Image (cartoon, rainbow, N blue to C red; front, side, top):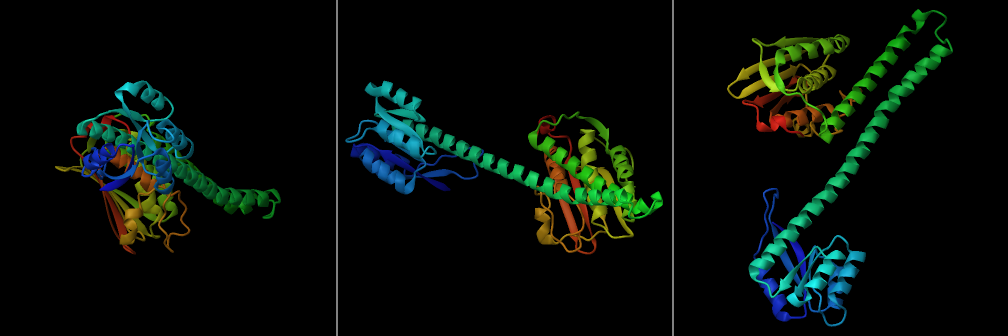
Length: 382
């Protein structure tokens, strides 16, 4: 249970002790919270004492009476707004001062509770303000993480595009200066290497576009009954040139048409990422096998390979954005670190389960099981 500090500021000892008693064993829970919230109640009898406590401990919530000896509650409220805007303030006021309470909410108080109040009234008010505290904290966290994702996005983009652009520029200058003579045949190696670099840049840009479309939830889907066998064959045709380049054999194992409700582009993105990874992280003379079947558990898609494999400790990291597993055998393999995170997001959208089995030096197998019937979320958005 998470315990948050809540400061009660009131010159009446009975009010303060009552709040302590009511909140001592009170907890707040919501369906979307992993943990309940409990409260550690701090006390202040004056505005000056409250400001000292706020400076020392910065409580999450302040229950603030306006009528205080010395500086008034609205003065404390203004101090909080100017110096600790993250603190949520709830005014405690008499019924005769409701107009003042409303004015206080207009200048920064979250809410007010009139006194005398019942234990249930106080609990209800604290529950509401705690929910707001949690939601505001989550909003700030999402904002921070959003900035971090954008920073990682730009870092990956600049790093991954810089090297191939420099290489292509270098080859073009060598051709411009005719360093290999007058015959075009002398430049075929430069041309082929440039085309390889351009292909890697295109793959990176497509990964980034897929990721941003899925991340934003704005990608348009057409959900209909499709045959995964046809999608898999199309993906294998697309990946065959890459397989030939790496001396890897591609095979598809399936029987009758295997149908499910899905967006065909989603399934093609999923197949392309799994197959391209299986090829890139393979060995010369290796193989990649795709199999599709329908069982009582659902539709099962499996891509296995004879590649370099993955250490057990690295498997949980595979589906994180912008993450590439550090391995001496894979250090020269290009990639954005987004392919498997895209696979995971698509699988999550369909309520599918991903299982990864791998042995270093032997190979890997990625199995995705789509439940049947398709979940209701199939028609929603990510």
